[in-house]
Image (cartoon, rainbow, N blue to C red):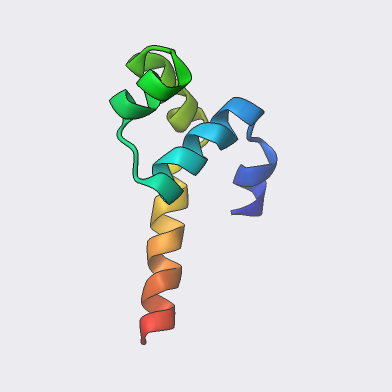
Amino acid sequence: METILLRWSNLSAEAIYYVLLHKKTQQELANILKVTQPAIHKRLDTANLEAISMSLNYISQLIAE
């Protein structure tokens, strides 16, 4: 996971922050940041949101056991 985090730009980190901590949709985030939804999608894809989400879910499951 650290390898993924080290490749984030400020824009990607900002998008991940809003999605994970504030549960914002891509469209809500686009409105907040005054960009298009496809731009947000690209930031999240570049940040590898899917891998981050899977890792966080796995860690949560381990803690719950």
